[in-house]
Image (cartoon, rainbow, N blue to C red; front, side, top):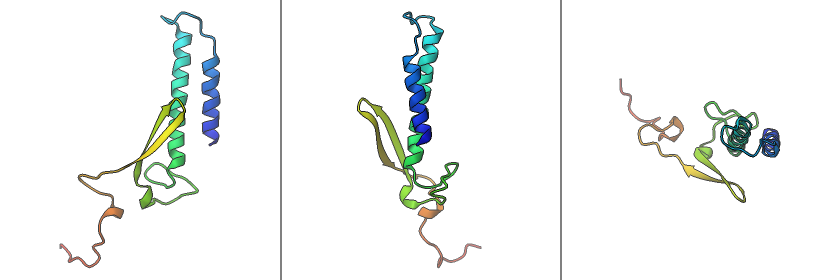
Amino acid sequence: QSAIDQLQAIGERAARQAAGSETAFNLAWNEALDVINICLNAELVARGALLREESRGSHFRSDFPLPRLECLKRIRLQKVSSGIYFSYIPVNFPRLAPPELEPATANAPSRT
């Protein structure tokens, strides 16, 4: 949450920067737009990390150190006029599912 707050402050500061009235070949204006867009993308990544209440792959949370099957979903975030909209999308595994989704095969015969 701290990162989100800081990114929003930086983005707001960049939006207030005076960059001149010309937009063609105006490096200050282009850089201000870049900073605003980079901050928005970083904020969406941080919000997605907050919504994912598990640790999986390279995403690690000390308050949720283990993967959780109910969190195995994609998170879609979108900037809309009223704020940030998010939704969860199920993950399809057409070729190879993670081990926790495989049916238990404890009593299956060995393939040696």
